Image (cartoon, rainbow, N blue to C red; front, side, top):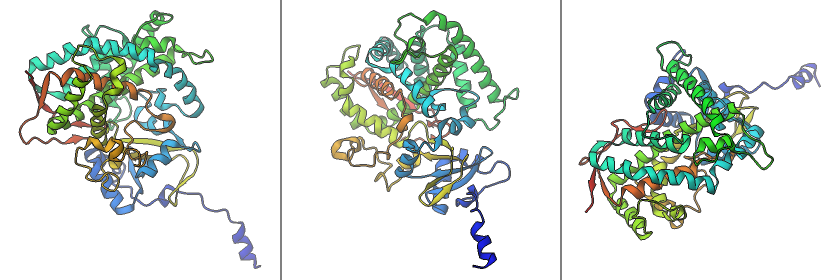
Length: 454
């Protein structure tokens, strides 16, 4: 063997680089940030057309790698080898505003916190939350009906904030909660601000101020809730413990409450808006759900807990609306080691992610994706044979949304109190456009008219 050959054999292999991934950096400093924020779907489609299902881009001052398709969703969400940090994936967006929320914890710590939190979403507490929803929903829906024509997104946002006040905090939803609502709204808005430091006058500064307000408010309330049995999520978390007697500290309760409150309020606002839009455009499904509600005898002012799972068609319609417009459009992670996917080696400490919107609207995954067809989620419609990660509005794996059953329950209560009494009508030949970032919402607020049924 020659000396040169021996030397070559001893050379260490080059460390993987993010630049080994096909893609581009975009404009100086900001990269693709503005292009992506303006039209995420077109940006993602163009990048996939150029570079395939694994591509590199540059947004929010970082290189990142996007993976596309159900296999990619499963690879990231199941994370069998614990390759991906949810904390450091979400931290650039939520870390300053929602630190230490359940979605920003990893591995064993996440598992232990989730076990404690799960006690707040067992049957007993869920029945208590349902009682609160049933107590408040009829009069809220009646107020909508009395108004007649209105912007639905603003109305459901206010309703979900009011319901968060009573279900999550156990407070009077008709009280003066304007400071609480403003703090939450400012924090959510700041999560996608271009300026990531709280410079005075910026939305990030308002978001940070909102978080300080919420910390002070909740810290004062915790001593009042410890050892007290009440049917709101805040009180449940103050007293939650796992099988080994582990409980949350005061700071952990605050962090989890702020995050849960944000996640539940904004995802319900987005998802119910989308459902109402689709029902307004597909009136035959309004009637199918209305018939289902009546056949189950749900014409009273309360939806029994035992009947929630019997609203099958209602759930199919909800799932289909979430397919077309999942509230959380994309999910980031950070690699904690070098990982390989479909022949591409992605280096440690790289932000990666997948787009639920892109998967849900992919015609190769969902034939005729623009068509509203709730029966896709029936057994005969392919629900049992379709890739299990073709539909991911609630995530999956260890980080599957802990409140998904609460989301279903709240939506079903709204529909059960709305559709027996009103027809949902949209303007003639109406179409809207959905803004995708940070959470999906109609750009025009969704004008609707509720017409009372005889």
